[in-house]
Length: 406
Ligand SMILES: Cc1ncc(COP(=O)(O)O)c(C=O)c1O
Image 1 (cartoon, rainbow, N blue to C red):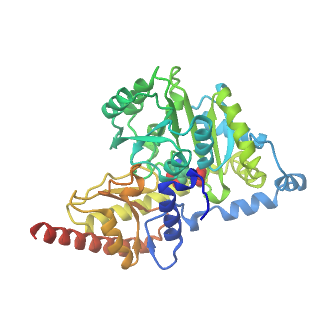
Image 2 (cartoon, rainbow, N blue to C red; image 1 turned 180 degrees about the vertical axis):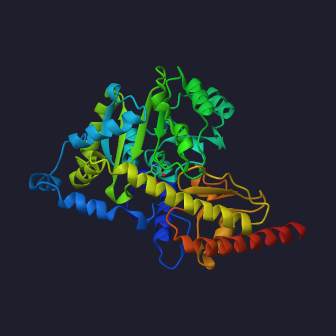
Image 3 (cartoon, protein in one colour; image 1 turned 90 degrees about the vertical axis):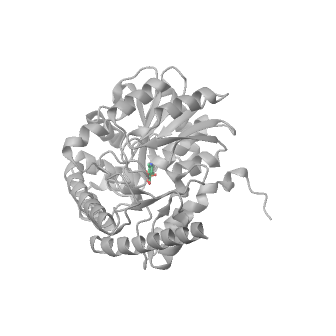
């Protein structure tokens, strides 16, 4: 028996372990892990970039770098973020090892055991696991198709005895709910937080993956709204646009928050891989990102359309969902009498996996939803996967009727 710390008892970390295992299981049709498509990675572009680097830059790839990040990458990132309206001149950028590390650093920076974090419900499970690891007290607020429930948020803030340290949200192509916040909802959210001292942690991992050019403006981040009386920490990632193997993310914050974050990062891993930062920087600097993103958007749109079509064809009418406008996920809503965990048992036995609703509930209970990820799915497997899933749902629905009748 070891005397393990409280930190290792995070409830959601087991879910994540299982998820990663299922996502990489070869024989399964997997709607599970939120992964980019393995056949779409820019392998050739990265080959060319590395091969054409000057010898000195190649050597630098193998070296340690500054904790805050490889300076040319910070510069390219400033240009990329400025195009999104992020106030890069008034903020500091810290390059992190994936944006999950940024979330972890921010949590370490602000959270003592028992401090309150507000989250959405449902919430990205990776963030939940970090928050639990640092002993935060989590309070979750429901979301609907347009974003966080403003009334519930106001009510929650008013009912708490302590001021929450921050509110964590994923406004663009939410993981797992697939929704995008409406501009009105983003504005209302900022109004509610205004003057409360609650920091807004805005996680923006998916905003480049919109399906329709006309809707690009909807991805405008709250960090770019120019609001002065809400402190916003913005996090982003290269994982969904270049590949999670790069482990490249970043956080944009005030100077004061940046300075403490840099100290924490120094102790964590000294710096993010120079190798990956140099390759990522060249991708941006050589203007390869925009054309690659165009290609990705059309590929993911095609997969979403196929999944949408087969869900409409095969699923029982009691199942509903909002069609996503970008990102990786469709979030099915089940009738209240059945649980996604029961469907999961049935469906995995027949070769299809997804992620159960309760995985994304901070309390680990609410189970009337399930997440389907369409990004890493071979197009030709989608129909078969939906048929198996649909049969599993029908069986659980039939069983629930018999149970009620008995
Ligand atoms: C909402 C959200 N934020 C952050 C991340 C973490 O991404 P990474 O650490 O790979 O940058 C993910 C990954 O699935 C995500 O879905």
